[in-house]
Image (cartoon, rainbow, N blue to C red; front, side, top):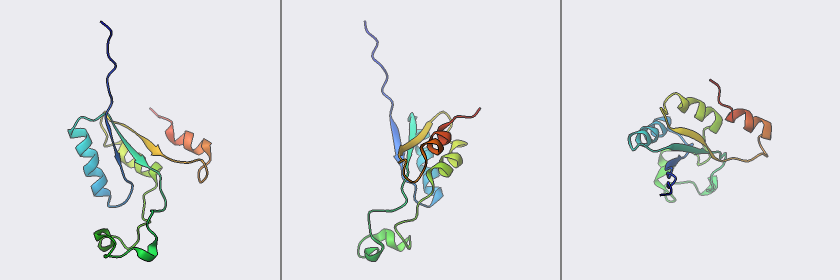
Length: 111
């Protein structure tokens, strides 16, 4: 009988503050025994600052701007000591703001 390959299941988390929420998502992923956690590389939200108010979303009461993001490379470094056996990575990034070599260096695993 042919062996069926395992399916990996992961979680993509945002990179917006607060850091405590991101840690909670990470803990949830570990409790659910997921295989991976991916973050995104964004520096600007889709909502313009001009319309960012409580009429648009309740989040405007929590954040003064929609464009507040953690740097994904620094965030992954912070989360690395908390992931246990989870694999971590970036789900979306681009080689325009970051040189491809810098992206590759960020992905190196050091033991």
